[in-house]
Length: 300
Image (cartoon, rainbow, N blue to C red; front, side):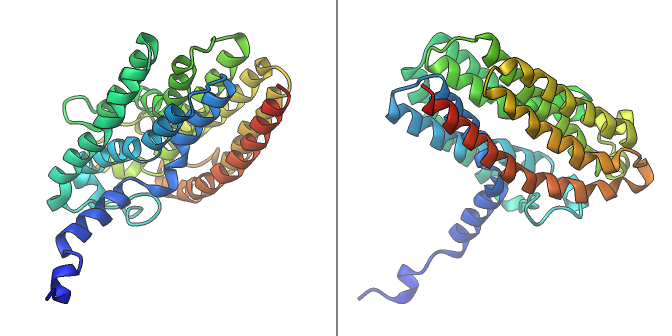
């Protein structure tokens, strides 16, 4: 006869599962899966099974690897970060570090094998760059997140590369409008990472961690982020009709960040309010982009 203890979840397994889900940032899963899926549809992809496989990959395993590796190698600084513990990430228990790294690799592996086998040299090259950026951002020995400017560029690569991968996977062409949208997306991503670093200027400096914000200072970094959003809006002018309407979206981010344009290093933590608003603004932006994608698809 089976006892209740035999069928009850093992505490350590439950703890590991919670840790893996928490470190993968569920609120951010859509931020990498959506760019792939939208770009795949807009590029005319018709292998639905492949779209499903890649979308699931960029939804969960990709985020587990990106944020899990980050939480493992940022453990010491995360302990002193008051923002950790909610939607902005967890402090990953040291006992779960090895398992998290293994889980990150093993959950990605079967998807990567399928995507390489079904893809082209171009798509495989893009996927390789994407995965390298995921590892290089946080892993010891590389730590691109501690190399000012490169930190913002690498972070933006995390989110733009799934869209670029979709275009190459479908054999799509990098026309003027396509390049304009991808360039605007990249400017948006770099600006967003820079603004996100502002709230940690004092904490990062005290921990000896470099970032674009610790080098430029809080005020100039916010102003640079606003400039990045405005640049994204300008680049969208090359997206053609009705894609050009998407230029309104980065303007919304610029308006959201503008109140912090005079922030100082001493009160940099005040930018956290803007960052939390940024997280929810992404939901609104996603809805608007979805409507635009539907309109474009219906016109075909």
